[in-house]
Image 1 (cartoon, helix red, strand yellow):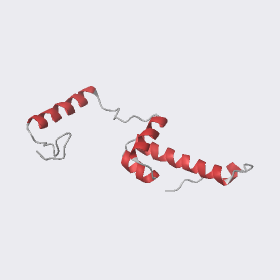
Image 2 (spheres, one colour):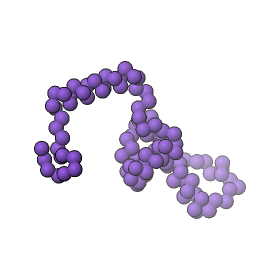
Image 3 (cartoon, rainbow, N blue to C red):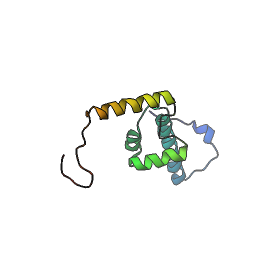
Length: 106
């Protein structure tokens, strides 16, 4: 996808190459953050697109005011997810692979 800015709208501006690159990087970051905010991509995918580690994407999300959590989820939805997770854990369907503090298997 390409974003086009009509050059005539920028007439009269003499932008250095550094400023142009910085503005394009900011525009790219904004586009990726918008995709992330609406749930079209994950933070991991955003990192790959922007060429930065996922941790840096999380910091960008904070700067852009994007929640790390799905804010559309109701309390009832969250309670249901917690209940389902507890049932799975209580049934023993998830087994830890490594013991905390060592590399030995259970």
